[in-house]
Length: 118
Ligand SMILES: [Zn+2]
Image (cartoon, rainbow, N blue to C red):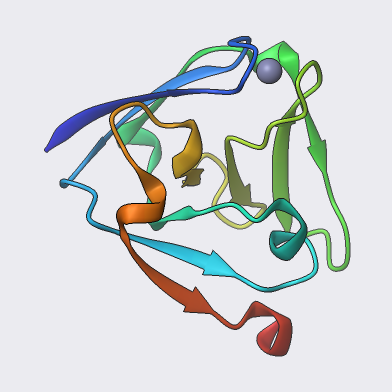
């Protein structure tokens, strides 16, 4: 397992998580993901592998549709570092563009058809 560190753009939100070496990723074409254009972790990281180091109060949450996904974002810089669902709070899928030591566009990126499925 590797300890990865990440942050939003302004640095108010900082986090770290334990993961197998990250070699693949996910992009989704649903109405919000296509706008963010984020490259996200394939895995959801459970609370025991994820630690928010700073920024709980710096974030806001955006909901839409069925309101079942918590789209966390930094109130200062607007960057989305991760999301979780209301069914498994604290289990995060991470925006790999926020993570140090990763070149997201060089990963094996799987296209997820959220537009059709969601
Ligand atoms: Zn920020």
